[in-house]
Image (cartoon, rainbow, N blue to C red; front, side, top):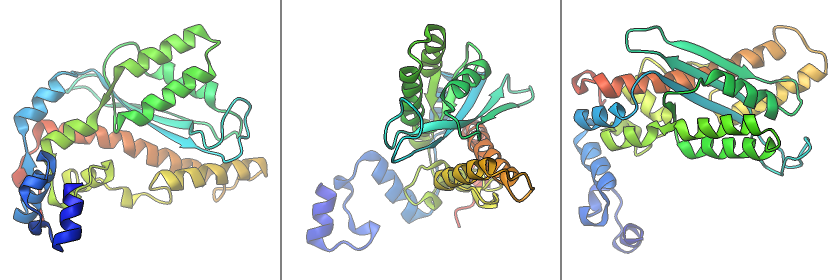
Length: 268
């Protein structure tokens, strides 16, 4: 509120016009490194935070669909219903990265097959990294609510929820690049920390909104009998590539947090 009042009453037009004493620690860091055009990286802080969640580790991301008017029994208006996940698994630093995925384009309620595939893929131990943990936590809680009559499945989903580790605050506490422009979205972080990987290189689906549109298009095409390469196959490929990049991005960000050399990161 103090910052807003200052902007409204003092006519501040640039970052340097805002006094440091009105900013919190994170805002001061953003201001400092933006004005200096330098990269902030706390190598020891990053290593210490990640050491609390050692390998083997998983990297998980969900995609969801919402309907204003529910089409499946037991669901609610605008409920975010997961129909896809990507999961990368890193057994050890010197072992090969593995990948599994799930995508339901049948147009039927994906809740149970999604949950069963998730339980089968996540194993029984090891941290499961996500980016912005609240989203996956809420979706797993919804799955538990929908499947509450299946005690074993509920127990397994609850165990997965307890293993979730949010990579976002680890990155936010220990890294900042002026190219992020104050954003810690995974896309902004990837563009600055691992510029060789970019969502802009994806065909078609590049964000959650376009993923929902691709889902609806694919389901409509499937029900209409479309099987051509320009039909459901394109939507399926785009969805799988997008979700896979979400989890591979977390693998790459974790690796950079452990081994980044700020001299290798360009600021302009």
